[in-house]
Length: 228
Image (cartoon, rainbow, N blue to C red):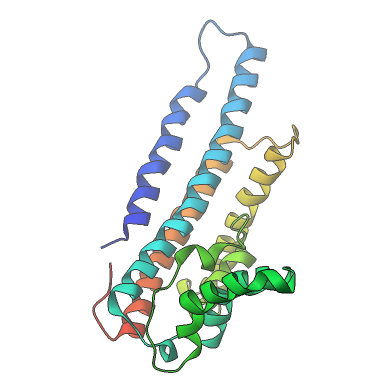
């Protein structure tokens, strides 16, 4: 059973597929106009796919944290890497404040994060803390995110053969780079429909496999059934 985030992603990708129909040029369009429309649609498809791909990680991260909060786990359950990430944002904010203004913020920090730094206390995790650093889901960023869940290399974990791993890495990197080039006004960034289909396959493959892997990790962490 997939996560709600994966179901939402799969449904959203259907919207990109619908645009393949629009790529077929109108009989009344000139060759020049048809080419411009095809290029514009291809660029739009990449931007949509990238947005849905990024949203998947925010969605599945929120589901994962909701599941953990429902189990009321002790602080010692979580790795130091995970706890440091959760506490990073408020600590950084405190470091930038004038000393006289820190009182109320220290109280808030102790209330929200103090339990994470005592061995047996329980408390509530805040899902947005774990992805505050994410700007675009490049392969290196995906490896970083899943390492917080003690998965050393998510690409190695979800692929068996080096060749498949390399193709998946490259597929994700290509469409994220293409999206960034488009967003920065590079008109030379013109994906073909073959490129779009390859990008969709890469995104689907990664999300489906990583979804199962994270569910397995959460099950092990809580010593309970899989959340999805």
